[in-house]
Image 1 (cartoon, rainbow, N blue to C red):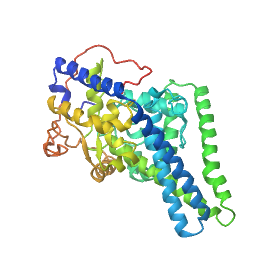
Image 2: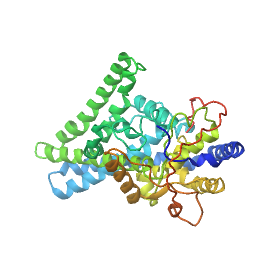
Image 3: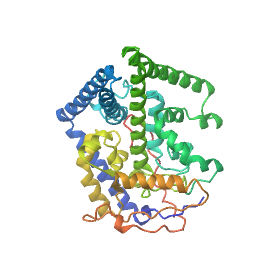
Image 4: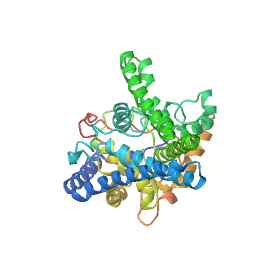
Length: 404
């Protein structure tokens, strides 16, 4: 399908794109040259806080049959699970702390409190999603292959039910992601063998059995016969709250109105600078307090995360002004908005695109300091094909340090 809206890349010259790449590379190099004790202290403190909250939540739930203890224990355990999933697990497995060379806090060894195996998630998310961000037909996180969240996607009657099964996905997000990571489509296309699928299914089954035994059998049993049901209900609630929160943050960072999607033709022979611009246009930030950003894994800075997924998350707020300044000079948008606004746009898109038709929503204009999120400069969609990008070099190959 021809693109329904022109890309901001169209106004950039080859020279500007090359210079932009050098500027974004320089930010990464400078930050990594500065990493040290304060960064190490941050992640070790976060891990200690998470473990303390998890222990406290479990202890409180020994009294789960009493309502105050149930509420306090469930809330504490929910916060612990969110912190472990978002600020610790996601970011450690992105390699953000590999520079410390600490084998206990390393992407090659870390496992998390989630249904996905580390190996499957790192391939699906770190490589597929972060390399092919928002490329239609390549980025399998674009609607997770079960939802129509972009009008360029062909409509299918099954999408009529997506508002309903989106609610189920919210509640059981970790399991939805785990099955998504299996990439069953690759089996149909012959890109993955059945032996590989069996290996991944066995890994997922082992992980699921541990998760189920821990949260739904062992800890409820420790609460005794009188506390079993109450503790079980608390653990189910904590997992659902964690899943709903993760779903909301991730969807708000990828699918609000401001973000662009791309055809494979548009990104053919993409060079480093165009790669950066695609990451910039394909993500959206969520505005919030420092506590909000910690609880969201600093994915409120989704733009910065997509530019530099291997950069420690605490540095995103520090580099955001520099990213905005680059956007302003190169006349590019900087996608951002309050949490409830972003969430509302996402849910509206899911509802509207459940039905045939639809068109891209207006996009932000170039970022301008003093104009908030630049939403005042929203531009209307142009129903014109995007002109092909000039052929310049080859797409960067995957390497040990992720490109994005």
